[in-house]
Image (cartoon, rainbow, N blue to C red):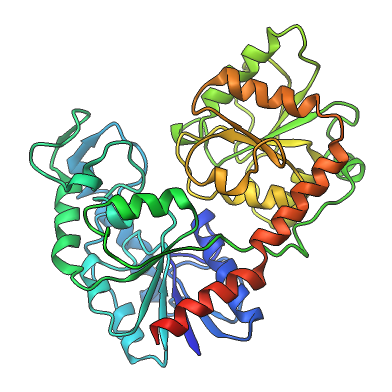
Length: 411
């Protein structure tokens, strides 16, 4: 069976990394899997990208061209990326001329494929959604519900003005996507969104978790990792990670800082410190409730694995999230996760067994989760439970088998 995965990148960003892991899970299952991308940061021979100088320049300029013109006509308080996907590409021609039995779409924005391009693919399609874009307008995440009701003239949110880019984008999807596509979501939350959406409520739908290589992502000596990273040796370390989290409200860094302030006022709270990756230390001194160690932006898995294994628990205070890789990776390393009850995080965390699920956006309950962990009577057993669940739920073999069943049913 020949499978081609379409993804804007192989490992740049969480969606790309997840796509790449699905691709490699299939390779391990002896599927002839290839990945076609616009941008690559690997030397993987199974990943193909534009090779000619002109092709590379065109691929590089497509997204800025649209973002600097069309996207700016929309005035909105939703600062998360918007993708109108208007520029056609040569990928469709290459796909239709290929020997692919299955075309597997992933995160194909940044003008990799246009909305009309998707309707021109003549091969059986599986589409793994990594955010809300496919059934929304141009938004990748949104808290309003136009995607449920249809993008009408009279249901535009008050925080938007200017050109209604979201309605225009959604109407193009409605026009071109007449034939339902097999949709896969990594989380039950995203599947529920698909099933309630005006655009895709009657499309075939399956939930399949992201895979992870549990031979690589595994527990390593905490003592050694702390020595290597020059982190404190005798104090509990909390972990938070997200790229540019101070700018991305969706990641909830402000909620985490408020939680730590709340904890600091608790007389039962013991000394802890926070490790943050994905952002650099602020240039101006900032006072926080507890000491913070900034690890900067991490570009390799070995460093990320070392950070997980140096810490005791990871905090994910997201306002919205699909199935964050950091939670899966941390679990595979035996690290418990504390989060709000949002998105796909309850798919990963078993409450009070492999972590703690706090009531959405209630910092007091998130603080209770931290205290629950700090006061846990048997952290060694907790770490083992976390690791065992990750191996059972997110193994590459399990995920590959689920995708193979979908491919075979389509064929």
